[in-house]
Length: 298
Image 1 (spheres, rainbow, N blue to C red):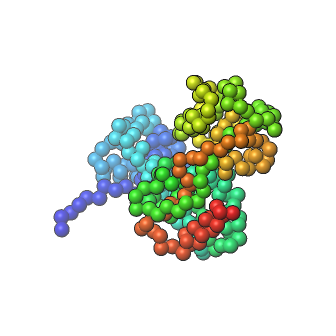
Image 2 (image 1 turned 135 degrees about the horizontal axis):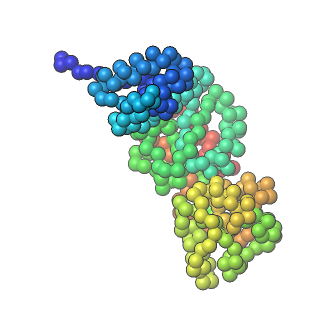
Image 3 (image 1 turned 90 degrees about the vertical axis):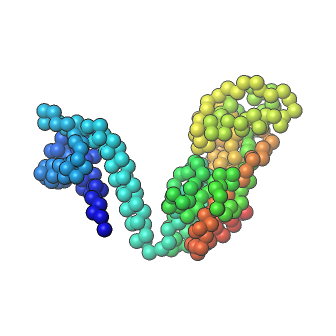
């Protein structure tokens, strides 16, 4: 078998590289890593010798990254971060029960799922859940997630989609902007800023085109990226918002928002539990699926 040289750096070499690149000094890097200066110097020297490139320029006792060093530090930082995440994830398996890794739309998690999780854990105290925010379709081949909770349209091929909740959009505002009990007519909307969702820019147009009166030609109001920002902006009195009723539920109960128009707009696609077909044989995930389906129907 032909000899293949091993160019792969050790974790200690990567840590030394990143620290020296960030701090510009072997002594400072040694202090940060709780190592001796000679250990850090040996790691850098061994890495340069093995790769055959100079990773640093030494100028007046300062270390300056070379082009090769700069490129490698960028990748090394990502590798170390990934290892750290992997180690922390592995630690969760020491809890003695199954861990469900879920990718969830952040506003769905904050306003609907998390407030209901105590009921799930009351039934399944041996299970743990790791939640991660996911605004884009999940590629289960490239991610560690067991399932995703997203809009059904975001499901990729080779997944199973279980309907949870239809999206019903309602118009809400803060009592500081519109008095409780007051409802708005279509013409009155033109007098108020309309909070717009940048990731779904057609929401207001979809609502307005169903009205029998002439549309508002130009929408005016703040534009934000996510529904949680829409909620905060509306609570601050920055304008009127269109929100899925399930997202507005907590704020309406708390009195920080109220519905200012009686009509609901049906969203184009429901919220769903999305599971990869390659990982459907999981008793823990099945238990979660049964629970969340029941919670959604309550």
